[in-house]
Every structure is written in structure tokens, then in C-alpha cells.
Image (cartoon, rainbow, N blue to C red):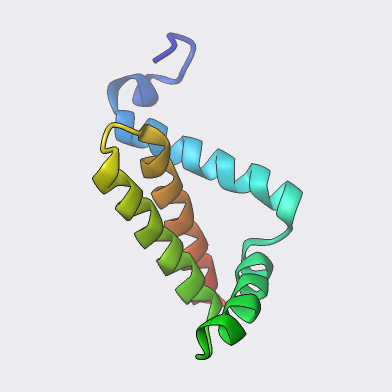
Length: 97
């Protein structure tokens, strides 16, 4: 970790990962719009493909399981862990709406 990072990030890679995930979610919102809206759009597209009603929170949960499946293949790939944390934040946002 870079020395210019706050001390809590230098001592705790978990905290650093959560901060990175939060930053990534914020950046994605600037590109794709609000999390809830993006998950709702995806759910609407998945519904006819799957033949069942899909809720926005289910999209986020499915994306978490996709990232877990990728970690099974490449457990050293740190991006997947960051993505899981990010999708967990998206899931929480969907649950609150």
C-alpha cells in the first residue's frame, strides 16, 4: 500500500478494500446512473429471459454470486473481492428502496 494512504488503510487491507469498493460504486454511478435504477433496468431485462419476475435486489445478489464463482477459479484476483463489496453496497441500497 502506498504510504500516502490514511493510517487505517495502511494497517487494515479490509478497510482499504471497502474504501476502494465505495469509490468504484461512486464512479459507476456517474457513468450508469443511480444503483437502484441500474439494477431495476437489469431486472427488467432479465425477467423475460428467465421467465420469472426478477427484483433489483436479486440482480445485485446474482452479481455477488457471479463474483464468488470467479473467485473459485482465481482466488488471488483481488478485483473480484472489491466487486463483491461493491455489489453488497448496491444490494443494501436496493433493500432500502
